[in-house]
Length: 223
Image (cartoon, rainbow, N blue to C red; front, side, top):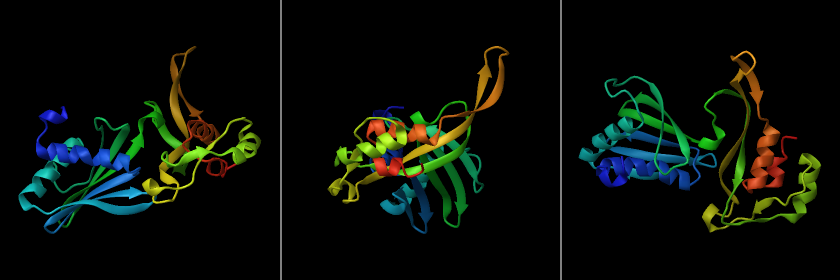
């Protein structure tokens, strides 16, 4: 459904993942309390509120729209649920969990970058969340070239963020996921599926370095 054809409640809910993505959030929480709903996002491990809804008629309709948009079973009330969906204009898969609370149903959304997720992924066998460079203040780090060459055997100039107002002078804007995973692949000779180990933390780190997403020190921390 296009945003032009959405109700104000749909538009408001679908704006939430977009705002979370812009802030570099790893997850967002929609939690009802007595007489209000608080929307929080987790950025760099810190959970902070970005919106509070206090209009009583609006609260219930917003929560119902959030539940519907997350693909939860609308006929089930007060029982835990899990779901996944994609929001338009947001380059993430969203994994949603619903839990009953004293004042209604709480929804937690986990934002996962689509290019990190394969359709045949079964589970991650190893993973690391690494600080992501702030793109606003990232600059070439020539001093780190020897480190990259020693660890990865590559001659490339990595990026490093020095800090700016956009990232609260931390140099960090979100996290990058490095992971190894177990997947199911088809063997051409037999047309049978088998479990294989795909990717590596080191390969993920090198790819993130090439994209300028992480600095050399953080990419090399595990090797």
